[in-house]
Amino acid sequence: MIGQLKNKSLADLKLVNSLDSLEEWRVNYLGRKGELTKILRSIGSLPDDQRKKIGSESNLLRVLLEDQYKKIKPKLESNLSVYSSVDITLPGRKDHIGRLHPITSIIREISSAFADMGFNIVEGTESEIEHYNFDLLNIPFDHPARDQWDTIWLDRPNRKDNLLRTHTSPMQARIMENTEPPIRVITPGKCYRYEATDSTHEWHFHQIEGLVVGENISFSDLKGTLYEFAKRIFGSDRKVRFRCDFFPFVEPGVDMSIDWKGDWIEILGAGMVHPKVFQGVGYDPDKYKGFAFGMGPERIAMLRYNIEDIRQFFSNDLRFLSQF
Ligand code: YSA
Image (tube, rainbow, N blue to C red; front, side):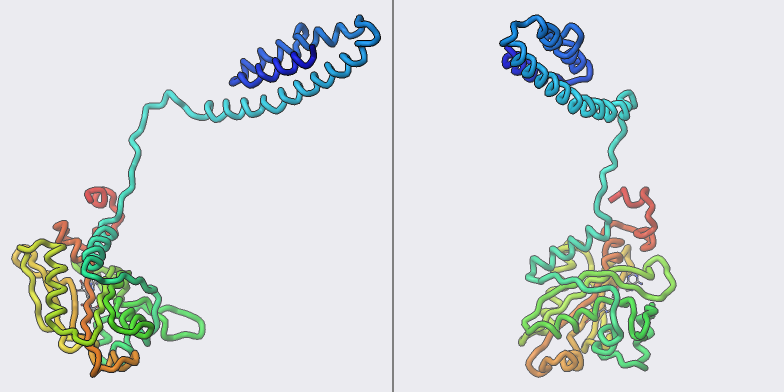
């Protein structure tokens, strides 16, 4: 009898899914007129031989059912408090779905164009030392070319040569120091310069450095690679201009500009790696040749999306950013 009641009460408890149905269950089994209470009340009138057995079994069942009741009640109450803290009468609101920043998108697009051409992608650190940012790039301490990369120096205890990298070119030396040719790599990352801003200059911006080193690399490889890049990013009809330029770490050096409403916007500097740079990292300049370039993704994004002022990219104005 007690066994059947136990099974039935526990089976009913499994169907309980609200405070109301729990209360109904409690009244049915443990309430004043409940099934178990009725048995407990009748124990006194049972024959002697049954009283002890049924008495102890029904008391054990009472303890079990009360325990179950105490466990389940707070769970149902906390569910209720979750629901009651949500106002389901409020009108629905549109979710704001995030998206990639336009500079992140353009860096990924450029990186994937170079990956298609067989380039690996490596990242470096934004904090650099003078040795890599200047010395190994054939820019001696007192050379006026250093002025081209106005530097933000870092105030570190016991170090006077720590800076925020002014270009991604230090990665050239770091990669060559740790790798044997052939090399075909790009390194995207952020740079900083202590300079006044205008519509095409920011004091913090990105660059994508490229480096190719091997035994038979020529200037035609440089031009072919950069033409292919320009074709993929701007389409084959866009006008591209190469001009001679000077960077101490290349010989010869060039810059590349893209047609901008009848004018030109310079997007990168490039050239054949200077023999002194090869010597600095322990490569034999008679055996190896290479080319390198450093391009500005912000300028490329300006050209792609017709943006007049580079400073808009980092103004954090959602009216501007949500257009991309
Ligand atoms: C040249 C030869 C190589 O073998 C390798 C790399 C280079 C590039 C060199 N390291 C350099 O930084 N040249 S640069 O000062 O002319 O900058 C390269 C590109 O970065 C520019 O063409 C421009 O697109 C971008 N840039 C430079 N200063 C910037 C900037 N973009 C936004 N704001 C600035 N202040």
